[in-house]
Length: 533
Image (cartoon, rainbow, N blue to C red):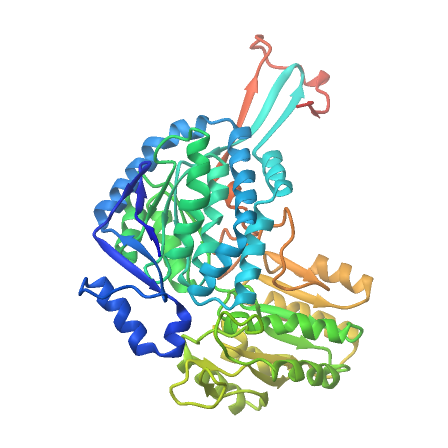
């Protein structure tokens, strides 16, 4: 059994008590004894850990949070002076050690309830986002040098200072690594592991990153790990003058409210909120490949912000595509997270699943598959923890737009497929672009087509979203391209493709003059040229 204390100011701290992590499959197999074991251990009632108890993590109070913030502030100046080359080497080394222990982290994520295929996808994103090519790109953005009229001009992104990271409980470990980019830029960190899923966060930081920092002589307090009362800690971060930025993951109403509070308190909120991604299949698409890509909608029972949440299919190929897609969806079944064929997770918002389904069917939608609550065995059950992967056909863009299942984020496996009314391709194209740009969220959009002219128009005209994927996995990762980020209700009014190592910095211009304070003669100004490094 792994055991993780808090980590504050370079020291391990026991905290007030322990949270025990019981393997998710034990809860799915028989929830009552698994819950009783966890509860007895946490109340210190003499229970003995079994093989299903995989770890314990320390839980602290507001005093631990206060100590962590103060430690991060104390370390911030020294860490900010650390040469960029050293900070970059630390992140590249983190990537190497993560690759070496990827299988171990995957098993931890599975223990926390992530289906194996989902866990593998998450770790692939962590590796892709911290690879050497991405770090070299960051370096090119953090410091640029130019020469003009004998003057040297440096454009430098300076760290904001103390960055506090609040990862989400549904994907805590993988999302928490966004804080590493803030570290790369010279910020110090306070990372709060969620009480419901602290293990993967503690593993990533305590076993992989913290030892590397120590080996490179990083000052104590560069990274601080806590776990405690979420609401109280967030309130403190917002009001605490020692905190500069908050990297927040959560739903849009809570995140946008937090952003307003941060603005009033003179600090920066970097928001990763809900998604409602669109997926477009044009008349000339590779329908089989598009159907395989749209199946990504059901990763984790759709309880991931960056999976497709609605599809728009050209009416000329709608019947053929839906036959292919529904055939694939019918094969998806619940199961234990260890099973490599399983995609589905227990559904947290079952009531909303049925509310959205009823509204869509009441508005003329057609249920193509799924629609029921089921148990681990896949059989219909009023108390089942899963929902069947469900596909509903909706006809007409305008008729679909006002439905909750289309206009809001669906955090359950209910996918609307919208078939526009017959029209010319030019009018359909304009309508689909307007539909995507009219989305209140802005995380990702996908297009499947063989028409390169259409691809170019689509890429030029679709403004909504942090990413646009074309003939590619909707949830796939690429070097240099950020894994996160969007606009509107996804990232707030300042949202965009989220490079956390840039978003947690501010741009400063530095001019080194010639020693002559007289203004330049405008008649002899020449074009600024970039200097050699």
